[in-house]
Length: 304
Picture 1 (cartoon, helix red, strand yellow):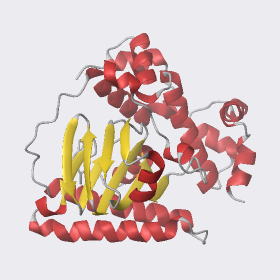
Picture 2 (cartoon, rainbow, N blue to C red):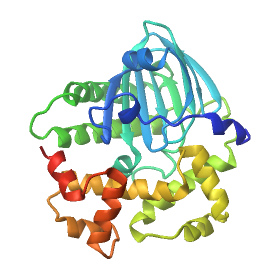
Picture 3 (cartoon, helix red, strand yellow):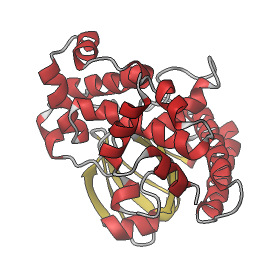
Picture 4 (cartoon, one colour):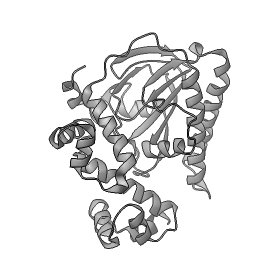
C-alpha cells in the first residue's frame, strides 16, 4: 500500500464533529445505529488519529475495510480499531450495537498501571472477529465486555457524583476484557496488506510524543530519533492527522493540561512544572492561545 491514498482519508474527532456536549471528553459512547444514521450506513474511509474505538455489534451484519483488509460478518461481533488506522463500513438498516471511543493517552495510562501483563504490540493492530470464531472459554469475556459497555452506556449521560471516575473505571474494565479476548483469539487466516512506511513512522512518532511530551524535545530531536528529516516528519503528520508535527506535540500537552485542570486540585503553577514548563506565565499564555481560555478559568468552567 503506498502512501498516496492516505492523503484523502479524513480524521474524525467524534467529540467535535458528532457530539459537542463535551468536545474534549476522554471517553465517548454512542450506539452504532445513531452514528450510522449521522455518518451514513455506507461510511467512507476515515480515521481517528488520537482515539481507540471498540465496536460491539449485537444485531445485523457489517462489511468493512480495516487497515486495507476487507471483512464481513454477522452479529454478535467485535471490531477493534487503534488510533490512525483507516476504516470504512457498510451495514444494513437493522444493524446496531455499541461504539466506545477512548483517547489513546487514557488507554496507555491504564496499561502503564499493569506492567508486564500485556504484549507491547497488543493494542497496535486492528482486529475483527465474530463471537462464533472465539475459543469456547472466551465467551465469558465477550459477555463481560458487552455488559460493561452497557453499564457505561447507562452512565454516559448522567450528571451524578463520581460520574467521570465511574466512566474511567468502566472504560478500563472494558479494555481489560478486550485485551483478554485479543490474547485468546485464533490468529487471523487472512494476511493484512503491508502497512505503509509513513503510517509506521507516524505511530512511532506518537509513541515518542507519549513518552517525552513533558521533556519538550525539539522537532529536530524527534526526527533524529525516527531517522527522518523534520520536513518528512511534518509532511507525514499533516497527511495522517491533518496537523503539523509541532501541533501533534502541543495537542498532547494540552490534553494533559486539560485533564489535570479538570480532575486534580493541583495549583496551576505546579501543573505547569509537571508539564515541563519552566515559567508558569508562559504555560498560561500557551494554554490560553490554543484554547481561548486561561487555565484558571478553564478549571472553574470544567468544575461548574
